[in-house]
Length: 399
Image 1 (tube, rainbow, N blue to C red):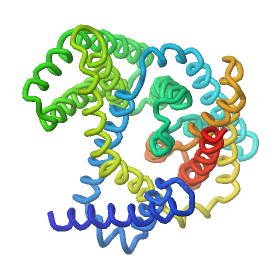
Image 2 (cartoon, one colour):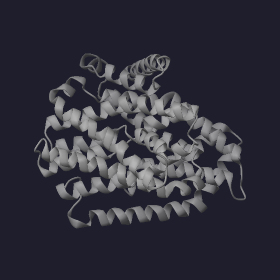
Image 3 (cartoon, rainbow, N blue to C red):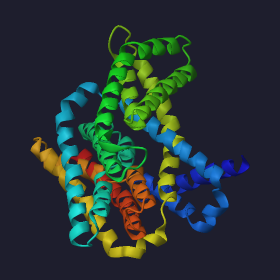
Image 4 (spheres, rainbow, N blue to C red):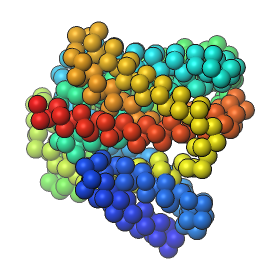
């Protein structure tokens, strides 16, 4: 217990210190938190602080933090605006997935002569995206209710579906993780359908009843506990049906919002109370730990083992994602300016990319050099994209 307390203390203190330095330089605070993780990941420091128990605790807090982040985003999501932009977001998701995937696969085959399986893994790794960093920047700029944020949230939700299908296809091909035969994608679609039906039932039965019960005590603590129960239930159900706990958390936030601001039981101030409580615990404690954990999982020395491969993949990742997003926005009659902002907001990578790469490495589908290059892409996009994104956000607000 003492060691875990020390780990959390050092993690938060260093994350705060470095984030304040980055903020004073006009850079995103999350970069300081990621840098704190990279520093703590130096072998002599990591081996001293992070035993197996501490690593497990940090990983658990990270997962809870991201679940609460997406629940918070759901609470702040206007469903009417979501419906309004869902077509445009689908176009964005198609192209910001297809363009980097295609370029990554072609470059891997033509330039580096990797086999089809390794090239497929690289393409999928470059096509996934993570919104956590950009959402934090939007929150810092008080733009979580803007059209830019809504496009990113809805596009990210569709992206998650594409990623699930892509990962499932990979697992079908490689016969891994318990999947067998031709029924995997079909089974996934059935599970998604069942999850949607369950969400519709809970929307009109259990969740409104539970919210009324939690409100009776007129206590913020009980209301917060109730919100946690709802979001963890939805996250658990979504995991069971292979839909991703993050989508479940996002849906939970949207349902709670709609229940409290519409219908016969309107209490919009309760929605604001829940948002405030979730915001404090997430952005004040759990989200910084998440970003530190991103840095903690990287190995700076390994990045330089295959520089050219890493540079090519970084270029494809950043400009393929931005270009694909821009194409999707323009084709859906959006502006070039919106396309550039959303594109750089979708460019950072996250855990999904590293999970795919780790799975492929464990099955000997890619070499250590390829794995290292994919890790380098995650690090580079985490640092470069938020800087450009924040710069574009500032220009957009000032216009």
